[in-house]
Image (cartoon, rainbow, N blue to C red; front, side, top):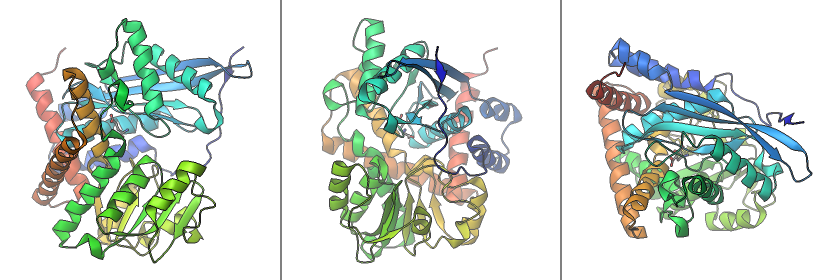
Length: 427
Ligand code: GLU
């Protein structure tokens, strides 16, 4: 008999429901632009929400049923796009919020995609490679009608990687009787992946940071930064910011954080994590907790771990002058006002971490034309698109005399609303 998989959440969740947290910002932006009521009603509900059961025979012979989700929030601008995360506490609300954020993110990035997100409730740290592969393939098989290069294109997110994308591509292709590389992005290079995709989100975080420092008239060489999270996004952001002259004085992962006022050798930390998986046990500086890390005195804070890290509880103690949201939803809606009152500039997630989906777009384009660009080409295109996106959000915020976060929502909502108006309502 199949068991229902129940994994206790390993960390405390904020009081905010992530979808409500997204809706608070959406509502505020809608009010500022006096959004048409019909468009508001259209956009507040996701286009499609699917829950699938993923029964898997585990290595010990037992059958366990995992729960998987895929939410398409909107597809007015094109096929929906967004990652798939594997985590013990993923639920439909979280995936709904993340899908909506993808809609806004793609609109801001000026790429022809709508927004989606997927998730499987599981703890990848406790699964073998073969169990992970089975989960991925069954999840994909259950969503064959949803996925497709012209309909909905998954990608990596928390705890998913190139290997998992390769399995998604292969499963979809087996059913389609031909290799369909464009059905998923974030693949390994030799099977239709793009150069620069792995570093893209971190590179985008660095570019957004530089754009903001430029507006403030601050030289990156005169800054200190603290990075929360040392996965793909955090580690690359830290490395590239460091290369631009910024001193990284704090880093962390789920095992805890390190503070070093002289600056942390990021390459050494990356090497250590490649070998040992976590920062734990590395000699990077004074040991601190993740909570302490967020409150360190620094110029730039990059929360690149997970949702709801900066909340009403700790926002008033944040000392950074600039927050660059590498993760999706790291600041709870209620904390926005506190940060604003403190005069802290926040580059919102839907702009700051859009480098990943921008290079996903490049990957999709390259898969479709069958011609692959070199690394420099990717970097130039990404730099141009990130800078344009930053400028558009910045102008939108100035125009409406509001924060970059609401400026970003306004820019995105106006764009999607325009597309909806042009396409009309099919009823
Ligand atoms: N998961 C990433 C994000 O949240 C990338 C999505 C994609 O490339 O489609 O932006």
